[in-house]
Image: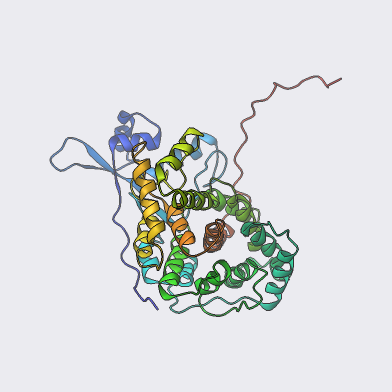
Length: 420
């Protein structure tokens, strides 16, 4: 068991005058007016003429300004789309879970331990998750009714609904009850991923159980370490689209199964959880043709963005991809897929200087492990379920139905005559 303890929280980030002005939506001169009025504090740049500002202080002022301009009275209300959270912070090509570097957490702890850290802020060494027999039976029965071509997210959605129906206590939104649901729901989802493997056992680490559902190859230590680390890295990533959907559902006091279902519905979009599947197919085509050049050319000619490259939150390297690529070097049989991934990055760099993201790293994992193109989506969904539960827990502690932005009507000016 990896037993590295969480390290210290990151130092406060500083913004330049121009960066602060852009975040506040004002001119640089106005930033200094905020300083003179006591709304912001500044620090002179050593040896320079400019000033720097505390990023959290600027962000807090920006949120307050948005609330006042929209007439709202609380975070996340009215026109304010920001949401207060203590879970994940993304900054300068790094990200943190409750103030601790997420890549260090994933390297030193299991997926289950990282999930517990995100939920509670406490480290539970050696924790395991176990499903309830009634929930698994209901989930697998529902999944078996789906057509053969149903994807992993289809199975996970119906499994979540079936598990909810089997739980008469699902409407208990106390922290203890929600955490209990989380610890049984995640392994239930894994159990429902494949209905053809009747030898499935709810034993061992979650990564070990998930491997058996996705790959026909035996699970060696290196393979399980990559998968377990991937799960831990993907637990949360701030307010992604699916996570926002979960918080909206939780704001309406939907029970945790329903909140997770909301996240799964959004996750299936091609620009979110399904992105790793597109990267997998691209990688397999490069492996088949032996050269990324013509494959990339066809993608660009069709007007498509190259999957597995770039991320709008990271100007440099996706830290999740960096960690996984390092581990994939140790994975048996990964050399061809790794070489193909490098070829994709190098070829695409002639068009745009984009770094590999976590979707390309997942594609290397799935392509090297005899997994289908949809396996990355399943890994993503199972991992992110823990993060969704964490966000639902936060939202249950907020004012109900606070997340209701106002619509900006752009239709015909009323009143209009009735149609003939």
